[in-house]
Image 1 (cartoon, rainbow, N blue to C red):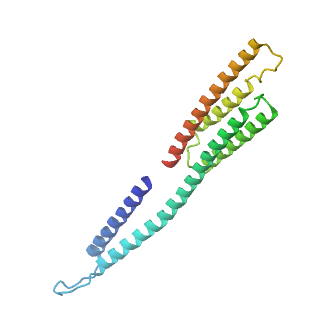
Image 2: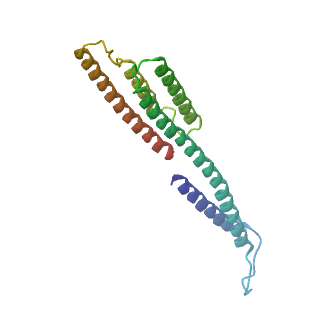
Image 3: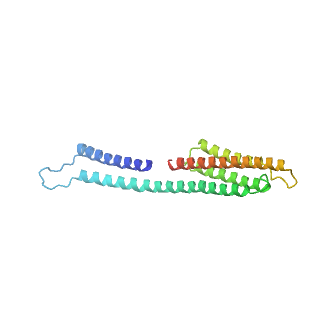
Length: 202
């Protein structure tokens, strides 16, 4: 929407420049067209029309290419974030089925997830599609760290030798942690959605 309005303003400006140029040439030029001629071709008007056409073509062609290129960059970056969100959900779902959340596998997967999000955020900043000081970027990384911490704080499933009371307590704590993990992931989805909107409006 903003790009289209800029193109319209530039085209309108080029038309005004053409008209103004025509007026200036008419006023200060020594050329003169006899008004008694019934059919005349005014060179100043022709010049103005050609100038307007040239400017309109140049602006439309140049800015359209820039707009298309920018649009492709936006779509690519948005797809990175959306694919990451889906992959994050799948990884969390897989890890939630483990008996021991704080495992070598969990730590390795979360390290990869953190590295990926930092890489995508870096691309967003380099492409100037998002402000480098945008607070949502920090909120996303903090949210991911929070989910990781919830996993490490969750006790593993009680052994068969544990008492019924211990098993019940451990199961309650695990359910509480899983509930917090789910809420944190919902927050992450919201943050990514807000970020996508900001990229689209850039």
